[in-house]
Amino acid sequence: MELDNLKDIWKQQSLEQPLESAEQIRSLLHKKSQSPVSKMKRNLRRELNVVLILYSASIIFYAFYEGGQYWEISVMMLIVGVFFGAYYYKKNKLLTEMENVSGKVKYNLETKVIELRKYIRFYYLAGIFLPILIYPLTGLIMFYKSPLKELNSFFGWFFIGFGVFFGFVVYFVNKWYVHKLYGKHLKKLEDLLIEMNEVADNNTKMSS
Amino acid sequence: MPEKANQEQFVTLINEHNAMLHKVCHVYCHSPADRQDLFQEIVVQLWKSFSSFRGESKFSTWLYRIALNTAISDLRRQQRRIKVDYPELVPMDLAAEPFNNEREEQLQHLYEGIAQLGEIEKALVMLYLDDKSYDEMEDILGINQNNLRVKMNRVKEKLRKLTKAVEHGVR
Image 1 (tube, rainbow over the protein chains, first blue to last red):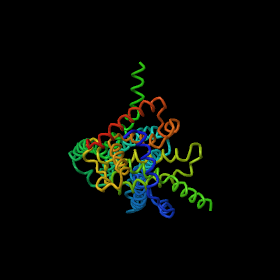
Image 2: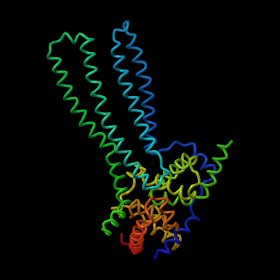
Image 3: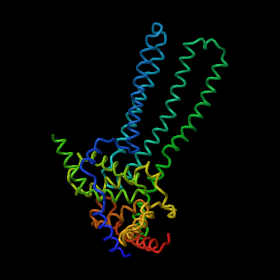
Image 4: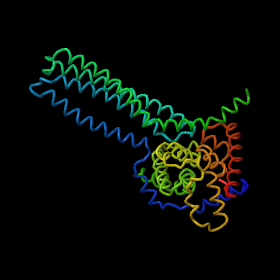
């Protein structure tokens, strides 16, 4: 088959494509996007709602429990909550940027690769930083607010030692998990971009 | 009321370009279920972006961009696609059905040939087969025209060989 022949075959099939009725198209307009980015955005919003409800209730509870004896827990949760707010804002911003599909294909791929890299780095850092922030804060509250402070110094060293171990575990598990979640996708997008840039590179090599 | 008018205008435009959307789905998805999913997703994405369409480019150019972006960068569907490195696994569902005529068989061969191309090459082939000018291709893909010409020559040659191979039963 010659290419002109292929063009004819290609064009003729237009007449055979199934036509959706106007009603069917209209019904699609009310559907939610099933793209991974839109799903991630929806999950993030759900996560925010759960955190808002649970954190607000817990902060109020500890602020007044036993005449405000455990107010430090409320402060700790408030600090973590503020960090979560920043985490939510940044993640939502990156996802919104990734959601746009109206640009030129090459630009769209470049944007997605850049934004996904940023997203992975942020997810990775937040996954390490948040547990490492919470662990010493929990330790401080435990020492000053519970009978544990009366224990010998062994417990203190154990707590620090476990913290170091915990930090290593968090670091490696987080690295593995982030790679498992997004590594393949990023690689695929990068490969597509390489395929797209191939010609430009070859031309540059030929002219030099 | 303006929303309603907007919606009606959108539905009319989609109906006019329905065939093009189906071609994108056919090129990028192998199973009917995946094609249906992709079609829905493209329409949803088009509707989400419709309010920002200013008419700076042709509607078909804008539509092609969104359809190709959705098809190419859909991370989820990519995992379900059969790897074209193993063409013997390409499940062209049409192949199972008997051909009604020679043209249908040729169309099947064309799709089988296209299925063995890379994701970007598929986009180039579609634009070529749809007789898009290099200006329009540049506007859709964002690749400059010199590069497009080089790439297009290679892809056309590749497609010619692939369709011939498929025609002669070599995959």
